[in-house]
Length: 178
Image: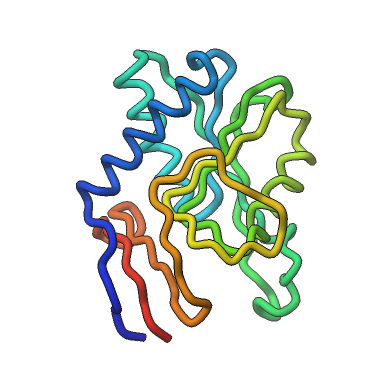
């Protein structure tokens, strides 16, 4: 696959996350009962970064959890003969919390649907909101993010790749052509 366009660099990613942090605080009228849950892989470092930005704004540490949705996917049988299931690590009760679910890219909405199912098995949150760095469109389910870093209209032949230092050694968002 070839890189078609670089749409965000490190500074743009940071600006988007700072803006999302402010929007989360404003929409929730502060940070009381707030918790962030990152969807494994790149949702996790994004959730941690949001927690750091919220701390720098409000002076309050927000708990961060890690959600593995592998067993909740509706395409599990087509992924691999034995998909790698990793651990969900949510060191707090989600019941009555305002949960901000965090992911890197929203596309069809199926990952978010799986995450909602996984969260429901852990308790009944007061609210669940969705924060994504990139919204690329092409939804197959009626799911819409509450917080978006950048809307990037794409064709189905394109792939959005979010690269984060914690996983990939760099911070960027690129469009790849199949």
